[in-house]
Image 1 (cartoon, rainbow, N blue to C red):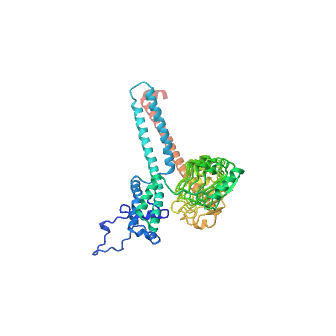
Image 2 (image 1 turned 90 degrees about the vertical axis):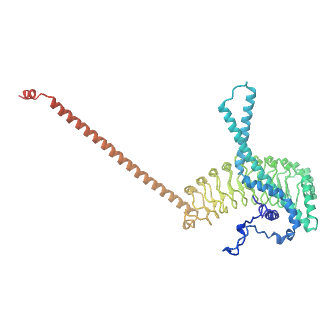
Amino acid sequence: MDPDPSNFPILSYVMAKLPSIGPKRSTADDFDIEQPPLHPPQSQEPHFDLAERMPHLTDLKVVSAMRLAVAEVAQTRSVLKTLGERPDHEIVDTAKMKLAEIEANLSKHHDNEVVLSPRSPDAKEDESVKAAEKEREEYKALISLDELHEAYEKMLKEAEVKLQRIYEAAVAGDNVAASAADEEVTNEKGFGVKEEVNEEVVGILQEALGKGVEKIDLSGRMLRLLPEAFGKIRSLIILNLSNNQLQVIPDSIAGLENLEELHLASNILESLPDSIGLLFSLKILDVSGNKLAAIPDSISHCRSLVELDARFNQLSYLPTNIGYELVNLKRLSVSFNKLRSLPSSIGEMKSLRLLDLHFNELHGLPHSIGNLTNLEILNLSSNFNDLTELPDTIGDLTNLKELDLSNNQIHELPDTFGRLDNLTKLNLDQNPLVIPPKEVVYGGAEAVKAFIIKRRLDVLMEEERQNMEEEEGQTLTSLLTRSTSWLSGVVSNVSGSVAEYLGGVRKLDPDHYLNQQL
């Protein structure tokens, strides 16, 4: 929740200096001369070498102006500390869908109440409505929390820019307090420096509109602005804007209805326009090397997309429904981001051949990953302490040829691993593996698969042996039970017959018996 020093160095420095934000000392922390601590107390304040590179940060007037400038950030941070961490993107999307369903049902219920004649309320129906209304409020609270976090992240970015300008004013010898006040007015009224359009770009644009150009390459031109009129070049098939300083892509890009390739790598983009979802012919999208915190949900509408490269950004999640729509995608590269999880819809990308997820913060994979039966290359390396296990469904990736699991915390490979018949290249370096042991890992993919298969067979044979012993034991017990029951029956019958015979003899007249014998 605190600003990341690598992304917001000045803001992190200033907020660490705020009394309500920085470390607090208690009386227990004070030095006792009679009972000195065994180890000297270590300061909990983050270390920044920023003051050495920006000496004006030690100026009390500059720091005071900066503190005032970030007061709103500090207040919002305190609120978020109380409310909790940002909810998972997929959970928020689900909450939005559920909320829409509940509100639709409640709306129908209220309409029926108005149309139908008055009647005594049904207790069960009333309880159902109350439960739905309660659930609706819970979903609203969850969505509001997510929106608050989103607003906070935007606030951090604006605050860093604001502090940078205050510092620049201090370096120039201007009144920093006045500069801070001017900055507030500028932000409130929306005034700013007007960017000038590159004349070369204007010339290319005019020529393209007249000739129906299909390819434009403006890479490496230090461009800061792309004119809205670019959206009028209907004939354009390939547009390369890589290696520039673009901060924004205009919404008018949706007008490029025939565009198949869009290259935006190595700019300073923090977001993409929702209108990008209208590029229905788009096959290749390269947005690597930017500052994207998210990919718009509308990207799911680009159903012709075959390759999506979003490496080296700040993505913390992927659109929830991305897999349901991008069924033609063959290559998805999202390495060097901050992804903690993948949406379950990823399993619907049945055409996917390459999935590159290395250098993220993945805590695991969804079970649906096993549906990617055409996947050939999977890179999960360097998720470090976060990735500790693989789902059993990993064994369903029957076409997988290359798998990189290095630099993780995986202790055991699942029993299904032996089903990866086409796997020829496997990297398990830097994992605390117990199963399989290291000496097996050194033998390569085939040795690992053979070990897992043998281990699985041994487990199955042991289970079969135990089952047979249990069955034999049950059979013997059953036989003894039946034998005992039969013997008891025989003894009972014999005893009964003897008794009946002796009883009959007693009833006979002895004289009559003797007369018959004579």
